[in-house]
Amino acid sequence: MALERTFVMVKPDGVERRLVGEIIGRFERRGLRLVGMRLLQPDRALAERHYATHKGKPFYEPLVDFIISGPVVAMCWEGTQAVSLVRKMMGALKPEEALPGTIRGDFTTEVRTNLVHGSDAVETAQAEIALWLGNDLLP
Ligand code: IDP
Ligand code: MG
Image (cartoon, rainbow, N blue to C red; front, top):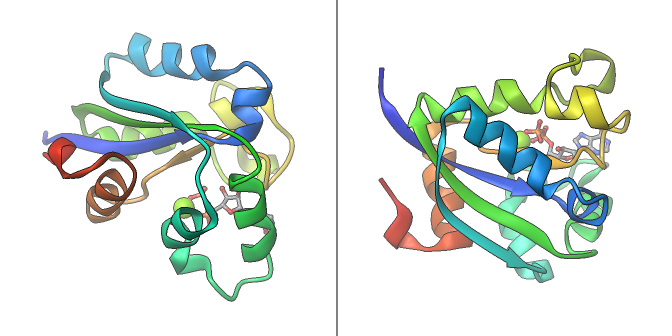
């Protein structure tokens, strides 16, 4: 079982709704280790780089507008199979598939304002950690 690092972001809706502590607490209780964290309001260039794979999709422009609309909490979490573990704890993208017990399943019914981002693969995690938090946190 590989020790991994993943990138997690509490999106502007999560900060606005005072859910930062709730979300961090879930990962801590599970046994993941917080190794980097930054509160910032991303500019458009950073948001566009982060969501570059979605460029051209109908939800891309409103998504970028949303992510730069307020402060976010950018974090790096470490643990055994942290990438897939965080994704499971976040819950599915489609609200009707986000199960109770997951972050999205417990706190949102919306597809855009879904509180949290987590890297979808080890390679994506490395790129996102470097983009938001710098190379020092790369595993
Ligand atoms: P993920 O966050 O579960 O990895 P992605 O497909 O990577 O999902 O989409 C990135 C983000 O874009 C989502 O978290 C959500 O905020 C937004 N998004 C994705 N699909 C839609 C959509 O159909 N409508 C509105 N927003 C969407
Ligand atoms: Mg994604």
